[in-house]
Amino acid sequence: MSPLNYDGRILDSLVGKSIFDYADALSVRVPTSCGRTGECHECIVEIKRGMDALSPHTEAEAFLREDYRLACQAAIVDANEEVEFAVLRRQPRILTRSVRRAIEIEPVTRRIGDGVFFRETRIDDYRGQMFGIAIDVGTTTVVLNVADLESGEILDTASFENPQRFGGSDIMHRISYDGGDFPGELQQVMLSAINFEIGELSRRHSFHRRRIYEVVVVGNSTMRDIFFGFDVQPIGERPYKSITELEMLEGKRQTTALNVKASEIGLRVFPDANVYGGPLIGSHVGADVAADMLAVAMDEEDDVVMLVDVGTNTEVVLGNRHRLMSASCPAGPAFEGGQVRHGMPGYDGAVESVTLNGDGVAFRTIGDALPQGICGSGLVDLLAELRRTGKMSELGVFENGEREFAFVPETGMSLSRADISALAQAKSANYSGQYIVLRNYGVAAESISKLYLAGGFANYINVPNAVDIGFVANLPEERIVKVGNASLEGATIMLLSGKLRARIEHLVQTIQHIELETTPDFFDIFVEGCMFNPMQMNTA
Image (cartoon, rainbow, N blue to C red):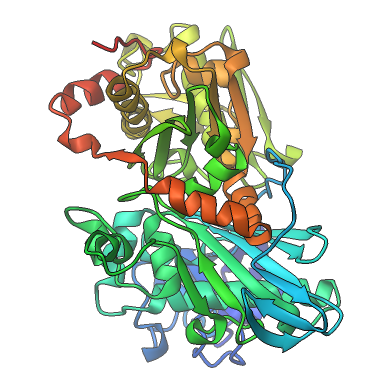
């Protein structure tokens, strides 16, 4: 009899038992709302090893590809082969720190007398409580705030891994999946996950989900449009624009922002609650970046500042309230747990910082747990330390022709030449976006008064190390400001301030968007960005 393995926890496998049975035995939370019939599609797990030991895919699992199964449908058929599984909706490290902007609480959905009103329309009787939800739907993780619409108080913050991962780790793969045999499946899985989380939060704080009267959703253009059920194929092909952006250009709408009733998309809150999708900036630069801009008050900025939201798709915005320019950088998942052999997201056991001393390696893991892999901040440190100590050239080549470098020698975890190649390309996407926007705007990096680094990954990186390898623009450390989960803060501002919601809808329409690949010397800049050196540029 061979073991069944979850996160290093072992049980004996028995023929006929489902993955869900083992999750129960291990007290692992796997979401479901259909009684384990395969109908809700919420209990997706990744089979890391032993797929052949499981029963064939059922009809309910037809939407899943590669190594993904529904926990309720996958049963052991061969107890002699080891099976290892992982739950998609693992709990990431919640980034609660963020820049906080003081605002006047004046939500669009508010209490007037004994009624609840959305703008001028009465939607319900006031029943003693009014809540709102702000959601940042990221490619990798989903984070949400529950707010009291009357006081503006944040009751709770929750997060989970984006369950759409079975459709691909980046935007283009998600677009391709959604245009395939199972359109709408990505939306349904996301809505189910958020409905599950809303249920958990409402129980934890003892209020009925029908007391949630407004929801604000931000995300990159693809994530936002999938959430609302729009066809995202136009975002994946020239001119890379959302349907809402194309319709606005055709004069069919005044804004790319969205307002729909919760009942129209299946969000289980008050049925007539307004679900607001933040406005897009252009192409892949979406509502999450518009939210970032609100959080750091770029709508009031007179100095030239740069905002870099680092992620699977990194976005750059440069300028002030008078003139703004943006670009999107398809960095891919290399710094977020993909394409690197021992890479992983920021969960317990991820190596998050590295220092090299002579031939020794000192590292720290999240949660001080035993090392299971290395996350983005650890990779930035490792690359910078390899350069600093001369163990790796600017081209990413190890000294003495070595093919890999062991950063956890005891367990054999190492960084290979193939890993470095993937990281170089991901880093160069960030480099190229910042470089090209700076050059087009006509300013050198030293002219920027502040560089805001947004996002969970950016919050944990060592800034001097990131500068040394050319991951971010070459500025003095004191001018680089980590603003944490600014997208969530901005979404919360949209929830609590109708005035600022309207202001950002207007401001995004003034932003000049640059398509990086149309830059004549883009290839030369990208090759330069693949080198592990600080950014050097001129504005000529």
